[in-house]
Image 1 (tube, rainbow, N blue to C red):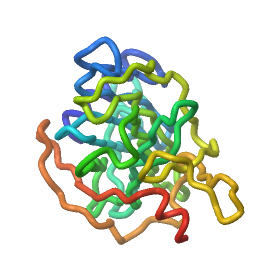
Image 2 (cartoon, rainbow, N blue to C red):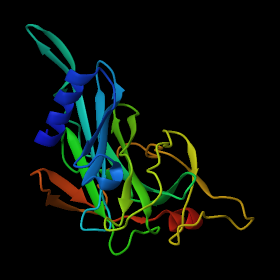
Image 3 (cartoon, rainbow, N blue to C red):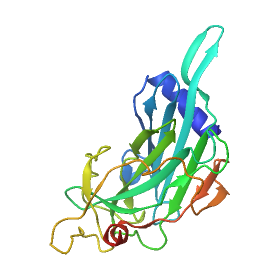
Amino acid sequence: MSNRVRTSLVRSLLAAAAGTLALILIGASPAAAHYVYQEAFTYRSNDLCVFDRSEVSHGDGNGYARVDIDASTVLATPSGAYPCAWGLDRPAGYISAKIETYVWLGTYWYLCDQTDWVYNDTTSTELAIQARMIGQPICGSSYYATNGVGYVWNNNWFGGAVWSGAHYLPDYSFSGMEAPTEMPELGDTVGVADGSGRPVVDSDGKPVTVVVGAPPAGGPSADAGAGTTVTAEDGTEVVEVETHPAAASVLTR
């Protein structure tokens, strides 16, 4: 278990039983922040707990997203049992993660781009993935947010998604509009934005929609997904993956 996730777990256990911790670093508002993230347990039971950390930042200037998923279980000690405090090893393919990037189009959030599902390729307690926007923000200048989706297999997929909070991109842009406070929730249906920052419609002129944070369609996967394992600035190993426009995905499926 990485120091980054272990610290998050300890902080969560001390702060609240299952509450979301919304921590904005450097700056009083998301627009001014160096990076924005939220973290929470998305599933808790006696056998399995799933912890999710979701981040958005300007990265190299045009956008960066990271998602950390951690599996844990009860820690039994002579002084008592501590739920969700011991890293739980999962076989390869049993931890899944996906980045969904949303853009604010003035009235609500729309899915802008996303990664494919990524799975742990060795026995592990965790999986971290990251993605960068190359060039200008993919759906135009606006507020962006990462919906970090993660599930752990235990005879079924358990987990959910955590919303990072909003960050204006590119980082050198100055927006006159207020940072949006509303956010979609797991299972909601939302629209899809194209590269020009406009809602995508089908051949009948109806809005194209997707379900927020849905789990993988199948069971554990031996296909870890395309990506390169790199060492992040905090010293943890992260799988760097590519995103692809959501509009292209939904119109060709």
